[in-house]
Length: 492
Image (cartoon, rainbow, N blue to C red; front, top):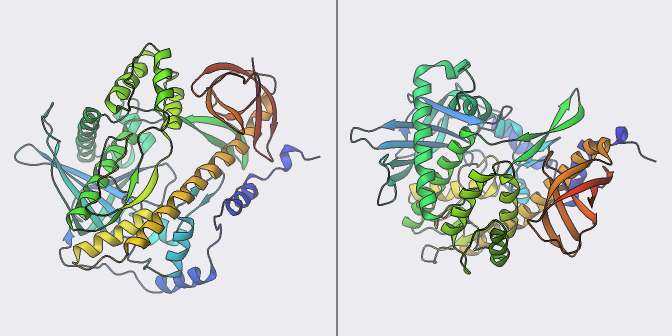
C-alpha cells in the first residue's frame, strides 16, 4: 500500500502532461536549433519605423519568481491633459521563426503549463527567461502598443482616443512584483528596492490612475466584476506543507487593465490592415436561466435574456454586501458562462466579442513567451507593419485557433487535476473536518464542490440530490487519494 510520503508530485505532473496530450520535453531538433541561435550574440534589429525608447522609465510587474517577462509599461501626461500609455511586448518571433522546430513544439503545446510543483515552459528557458525576456538592465527589441486615454470622468465616449502599434528598442529599468507594488499602492508596505525611486513611484501612481479609468470604462459597457481567489501550494525544503489563498491586489488589476486595452488595440490594428486574426472570445452565457435563478436567491431580478450590464450591477452589489463569499459567487458565474475559446475572424466578420470583458475586439498578443496565439499575432503584426502579406492562410488560422482551444481545455483539466492532487496531499491530514462549500459543477460524472478555506475542489459522494451550481452547503471530508487526486465529501 502506498504512503503519501512516497507520492512524487513532480513525476505526477510529467505524467499528467503526457496523458493530456502535451510534450513535457523539447525535441532534439528544437534544442539543436536553440544552440545555433545562442551561438552568437543576439543583434538589436531596426525595422523601418523602429523607435528608440530606451530612455523611458520602463518597468515590469509580475510574480515574485517570474523571469519570462513578456511586457513592460510606461505612461506619461501629454500637454493637453491626456495620458499616453505604452505597453512593450517582447519580440519572440525574431528567434522563433515560423515553421522552425522551436515553433513546431510551441504550436503543439500552445502554452506554458503551471502545475504548482513544476512549470513546463512553451519555449526553452534560455529563450523565455533569457534572450526573449524583457529582463531588467537589458536592451531588447519589442513591439510597442500605444494608446492615449482621456482622464476625465465621466466621458460620453470611449476613453481611448488614439492608438498605434510599432517596433521599438526598449530597456526595462525596474523588475517589480505584484505583491510589493500591490501592498505599496494599498498603503500597506514601504517602497523598497527600485520602488524607492520617487520618479518610479509617480509613474506607477499614474499607471494605477489610468488602469482604474479603463476599468470604469469597461464597467460602463457591462464588463463583469469578478474576484477569482485561488490557492497556491506552500513548499518548504521540497516538502508540500499547506495551501495559501492567492488574492489579487491593485497591481494585478493594473496589469490586467493595461493588457485588455492593449489586446483591443491590436485587434483593431489588424482589422484596419485587412488582416484575419485569432480572437479570444467568450460567448453569451449558455446557462443564463441558471444565472437568473441564482441571482433571485440573492433578491436580484435579472432579465430573461443575457444582459452583461444587469449581471454586473448584481455582482457589484454582492461584492459590497458579502466580500467573503464573493469569490465563490464569481467562480459560479464563470462556470455558468462557459469557457473562453479562440476563433479566426476575417476583417469583415461580425465580431463575436468577449461577454465577460464587454469588448468586441479582443485578441491575445501580450504574452508571446507563454501563449502560442500571442506568437501568431506577433507575426501578423510584423507582416502588417512591413506591408507584407499575412504569413497565414485563413484555413491555417482556423486550424491553429481550434487546436489552441482544444489544448486550452486540456490545460485547464491538467492544472485542475494537479491542484486536486496537491490538495489531496494537504487535506489528507484533515479527514473528518467540516467546511463551508459551494457547488461548482453538476454533470453525468457527479456533483462537485469547492471549500471556502482552503479553496479545494472535490466530489460530493453523499447528499448530492437536488443540488445545482451555486448552492451553498456544509461538507465533511471523508476521504482523499493523492495518487488519483480524489477528494470526497459528504453533505454535513
